[in-house]
Length: 94
Image (cartoon, rainbow, N blue to C red; front, side, top):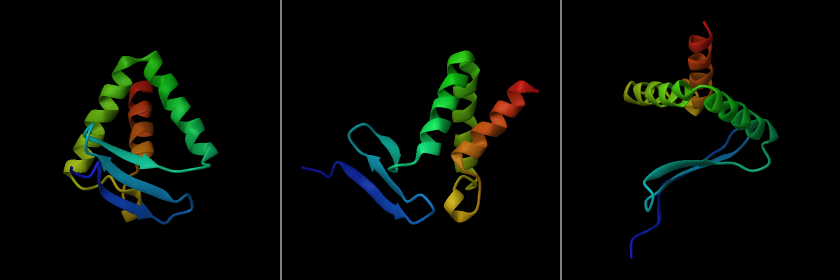
């Protein structure tokens, strides 16, 4: 039997983060605990996605672009996923 999770990494930050890949579902996961602000931000992004279906699709495209250019890692002092989403939101509101 193969391992269910791969690429497991604990990132020490103001809010510690456990990053891993769920091999069964082929999805990358960022997990943290007791981050009230993060929950609020997630609900905000969900609300924007519900209002405009272009939002989530464009965020995924921008995140993919940022990953290909290696500028999508806040712990390495580049752009976080949340900052990329906010830039997309600004673009759509402009």
